[in-house]
Length: 278
Ligand code: SAM
Image 1 (cartoon, rainbow, N blue to C red):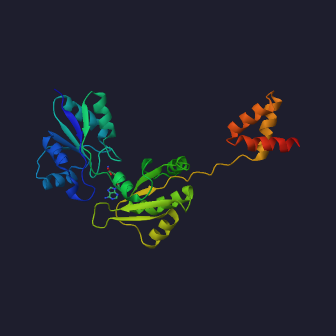
Image 2 (image 1 turned 180 degrees about the horizontal axis):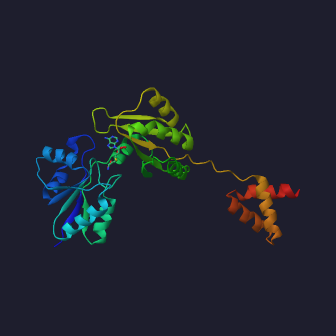
Image 3 (image 1 turned 120 degrees about the vertical axis):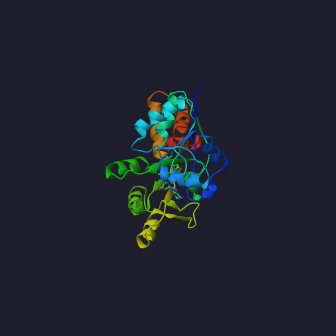
């Protein structure tokens, strides 16, 4: 019988965040596929577990994925871990999940630490609708294509960023979203120096130009504000009534239809039509 693939989240800073189920999943696995075996070995030592490890990372995932699928099909259970947080979220795993699912292998995940969700929950931004945008590309062209595509995005946006690229990213975001756009910079989550700076892109830029950023960051950026709807004027209303009457409608029907189309009260449209005729 085939084994299963289990995605196991690991702490994003505080070792106390490893859950009993995550530990159990690691203990029950026949082997662990790890982004960096040295990082995972430290965690296993902390948990007093001894397990065979194989590396599964960005540059070997294509051929290593096939090998992992073969081993699971042969009956072994595999636990997948990344260096920190939830595998497959801006970390290796996405392709392995697809490969296993395509091969009919059961894939399951233990819920647990994820920097994006931890940051969003304490950001103070709207959490009802959000989108995860991961890392911006380092290539200027695709970076601006990505940001441009988000210009009108109304949902709260979550980005990952490394400290040495933060200033650059804030500058580019301010250029596209505007200096006034609210942002929460969530730093060193679950660690000793955890901090949330709730400010605007412009003010964040000033702050980090003065004091260079340190530690790991999640940026939670407010969505674009709703544009006030432009109310149609009485001239628009009168013009539409005239058009409809010229097309053969009675004044009563033309007023009714124009009011519906323009979202205006019938009396207002009627008064506008009469004014124009007077
Ligand atoms: N899979 C991971 C997860 O579930 O959060 C994310 C891995 S991604 C390669 C690493 C990025 O996550 C960092 O560059 C940073 O943006 C964010 N991150 C990870 N740990 C963090 C922490 N303790 N505080 C703030 N951001 C963190």
